[in-house]
Image (cartoon, rainbow, N blue to C red; front, top):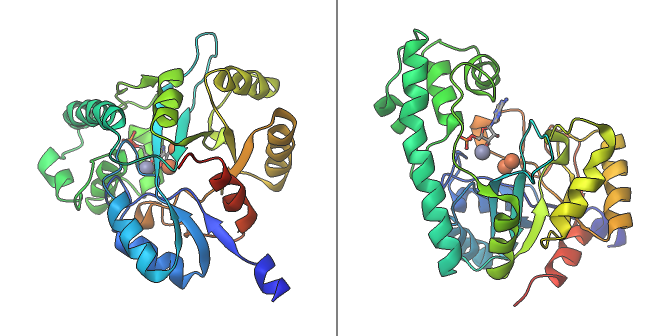
Length: 293
Ligand code: AMP
Ligand code: ZN
Ligand code: FE
Ligand code: FE
């Protein structure tokens, strides 16, 4: 019994067809059950449209479930960040009016950006249309991974990663920036909707110096950041140890997840990432103590 308990693991970073994952919220809950996960959170980009369906099915299956969101934010002034500043929100009320008003704005920004990416690709000699890409979207928001998938299908890129590396990634020729909300607004939006705000995948932030993660965390905490994503497939064991120590020292809650996207991130499996990740259930138990009812 004890050893069984020790093995309980969770996944708090999952994307569904509501954004750019390839499994529906119901299918995600089924896979989580199949993988014997004790708890999951759904963290789609810029939408909570999958949350109610996932919660309903999770309740039926006896799987512990947390609502969530992942918001891309602009970094604080003075921080020369090249990578992704993503804020996760856990336990948010999906019907919160302020949250939904901002999400509608972010969704519109995406909608306006996609034809610009297609135009860039066309200018680069890649023959692709928005219609072709729209067919890839089951029900949710169109993102760059959907464009990458069409490019792979048409033989214009060797893999999704290859499409990002040569065309779609930040700084690449078909990259188009999109409107982001400010870091402090993202954190406050999550907090006022009853959620816990967490900095996602710190390894992907690409800070100019090694030592400044602590300074950016301090700044984010001044606006209400409460947690740090310690467990993540791209984090080496050394990264995990470093982030864990940083979280403990700064009074931040530890979280973790795989950033599961189904077949749009084919090397990542729910619950175990590239195969060797295990996120302890205690992480979930601590996190839910900080969520406002
Ligand atoms: P978008 O929402 O359109 O900005 O696209 C963001 C999504 O693209 C995220 O889900 C990332 O997982 C994915 N992504 C970003 N950079 C890369 C990359 N270099 N290779 C593969 N996927 C990526
Ligand atoms: Zn994504
Ligand atoms: Fe992210
Ligand atoms: Fe993600």
